[in-house]
Image (tube, rainbow, N blue to C red; front, side, top):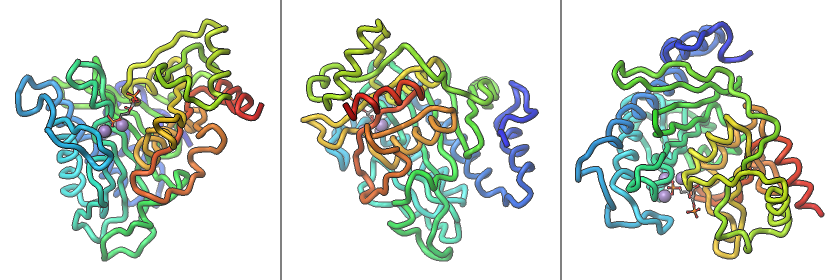
Length: 329
Ligand code: AHG
Ligand code: MN
Ligand code: MN
Ligand code: MN
């Protein structure tokens, strides 16, 4: 059953979530509430990003667990999402890019786990280029009545109950899936509402755009280098924003492929499996695309660490098929 059934463009996100819940007679409404909590945090972060205020601009002066320079907005977004999830009551445990350990919300009876990249593309904040938030939602496997466990957080991507991203671009958009197609909503700040603008998104099977950090190409696996040579021969357009959410979103709507493979500098790639690769892989597949580490399907990978990195090749299905062939030559 598709999420967008009978719901016209312009439907509010709240109504969309409610109608979808009605299509599942045994749904308890907890996942619906969780999605609304995320949307609330997205509105707050969208507002924080547009403020001309020294409290929200520039570096925080510290590094996160992965050795990256944290921006003030990385932390603000982290706090806002954690607070919304804690207050919403549906999440017991959170994994965040900005926190080394898992975060317990105190909601021990809650059924859900969230893994998130509170602000993606943070090196683009200071130059007014689109940034995003990525989230992945799992049902806990441990018993309720206690904190979530590491095992709850290290489930395979195939176990995701929902996943999505928020793109803070020329407009703010929320795109998500619960495993029944992908739908996109555009935020109207004057009304404080997200409206359905992109029902039942399908990624074109083929595309003519490719996205990667060109400076790393000589260190990419040979199969990927050869595929990139093919893209250039075909005169495909090179498009790389350097914000994964924005690069992925463009390719999702127009058709294309995004790479962040392993390289000499980043031996297991750069992107994080739990809160970057898995959620976008779920969306890509639900939209008819694919996501692979070059050899294995991303969603089948068994995570062993919270901040584990993973090579990522994601986008239009026929383009990924070709990459996989180049990888075996
Ligand atoms: P984050 O800002 O959440 O740490 O993510 C950064 C990621 C991703 O957004 C982007 O696609 C990639 O880093 C860019 O890396 P390079 O600068 O190495 O190309
Ligand atoms: Mn970061
Ligand atoms: Mn990121
Ligand atoms: Mn981030």
